[in-house]
Image (cartoon, rainbow, N blue to C red; front, side, top):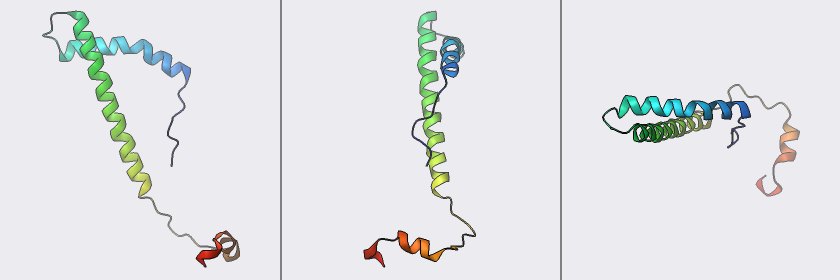
Length: 93
C-alpha cells in the first residue's frame, strides 16, 4: 500500500499558489462569462477548479487502490519451508 500522504515539495506548492489565480480567472471567464462582475467570475472559477480537481484526485486514488488490491504474485515458489514454519503462530499449525 502506498503511504496515505504524499510528500510535496516547497517549489511545487509555491508554483501552484502562483498559478491558481490565473487558472481561476481563466476558468471563470470560460465557464461563467455571463456574470457581470470579474471578481465573482474569478471566485466561481476558483471554486469550480478546486472541486473538479478534488473529484479527479479521489477518482484516481480509488482506481489506484482497486488496481493495487487486485494484484497477485505469480510464479511464487517457497524455497525455505523451515523459515515460513517458524513465522506461523503456534495455534495455527
